[in-house]
Amino acid sequence: MAPAKRAHMRKLVPWYAWALLVVLLDQLTKYWISASFDYGESRAYSSFFNLVLTYNKGAAFSLLASAAGWQRGLFIAIALAAIVFISVLLARHAGEKLFCVALTLILGGAMGNVLDRIVLGHVVDFLDFHVGGWHWPAFNLADSAITVGAALLIADSFRPRAGRAGAVR
Image 1 (cartoon, rainbow, N blue to C red):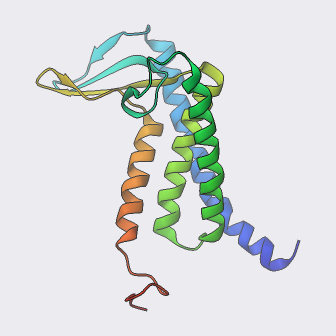
Image 2 (cartoon, rainbow, N blue to C red):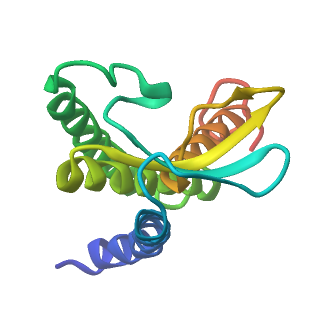
């Protein structure tokens, strides 16, 4: 392998290591909840937060959760395509820190949730925030990483870059 190619690959290692850390933390928390709770069990920790073991066969906000089962393959395929696409973006932009942090969080979250779908057939959710009797749909650390990553991508899109029209160098 050419020295330039090796140097480029070395730039990618930290991003993939962080993504794997997200997957590890996500899977450890899901394992802990699954081992400590019965399905549907909820424990209140404050006036606005519970831990609850629930399964989501759908997408975000349980979209298509009640479909006949065909959605599992669709969501796995979408997640795998996203993982490949994000990997390509990381390789092309390995030196852009905020952009890569955002992609890394999304990558780790996508990997954590697709692992659940492949192995379990559903995603394990357990974080339950609520107010006035209204509950936000339960979610997990992978979902949180994806959300924070998306917010960082939006923030990064407002930053000037060399090569963009009107960008400050």
